[in-house]
Image 1 (cartoon, rainbow, N blue to C red):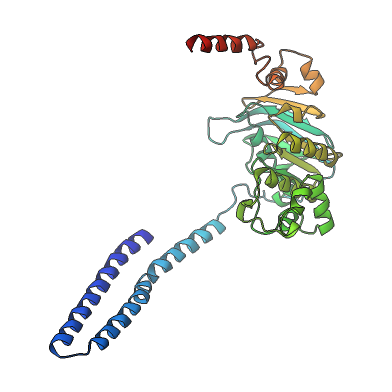
Image 2 (image 1 turned 90 degrees about the horizontal axis):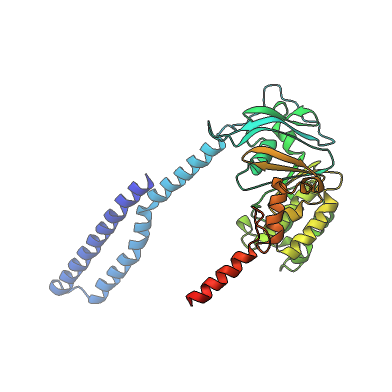
Amino acid sequence: RIARVSERLTPISDMLGGFAVAGVIAYSGYRAAVSGQPPGAVFSFITALMLAYDPARRLARMQVGMERALVNARMIYELLDLEPQQGDAPGAVEAKITRGEVRFNNVSFGYVADAPVLQDLSFVAAAGKMTAIVGASGAGKSTLVALLQRFHDVDAGSIEVDGQDILEVTKQSLRSSIAYVSQQPYLFEGTIRDNIRYGRLAASDAEIELAAQQAEADGFIRQQPQGYDTPVGEGGVTLSGGQRQRLSIARAIVRQAPILLLDEATSALDNEAEARVQQALTQVTEGRTTIVIAHRLSTVVNADHIVVMEQGRLVEQGTHASLMADPHSVYARFHRVQGNKGLGLVDDGKPIQTSVRRAKKAVGRTL
């Protein structure tokens, strides 16, 4: 509708304006030549006409602006009127989460029919312990975290927190007990202090600064022009990816929730910053139920429990030591690949240094 109105009004208004100006100039020239009208009066009138032309053209385009505003308003209200797909069940009660034990019982889920992402998944994230979820991309790790927060509902099985089925408690009470750091943290328009405070609106300035220190963010925050009161722009455009991620971690820390979810929380950090943040997280996660999703196994070797997923299924679980004891395990294979960084063993156990030497010799012969 906006396009139709704009394409219809713009050429019509421009053509009418052009004909009007041309007619006035022709008539004024005729009056000056035949009737002896002073040229100064003619030019004054033409100048006044040209000055009035632009406001008239803007007035003609007012309908386009109104149509655009109406369409935007309609879209906003349609969005506000949407009913959540995962509504609270009739008679849902407030969740009472103290210890934070998370239990997945034979969970199956798929975003579309006949395309399961998780299949018959069962494990326990012990209260006050760190549980790591590892596996190749597409194994369903992030989906598992989304189900725990009820962004989607399971197709089969159940998820329990402290013995309470999350389908039988209110979403607000469930999510208020969870702090979440995603792979792509989002910052809102406002100051750095405001974005950290979104984790818990009642947090004091001292708690915000302590959380920033624990997330290794205090240093770069104080280097900003206005410190904690520096505006970050929509989406945190004024900050780097690593800085946004550290602010997201600080926001999760200040939330003080019994359950902490870290979905590749340090993926945007360099090695030195990651080491500092990992050390800080070790203190923050103590006594808190923590579920960590990681591709880099170096970040989860100290986890109390490691769950290995492959194609939506749980294939192994245990500690780092117990999983590494079997050299043929999936976890051990992942560890060899990442530990050697392409200089030692690949996932089939064959050394690749020989292949590198052969490639160099082949290049030399070709040259």
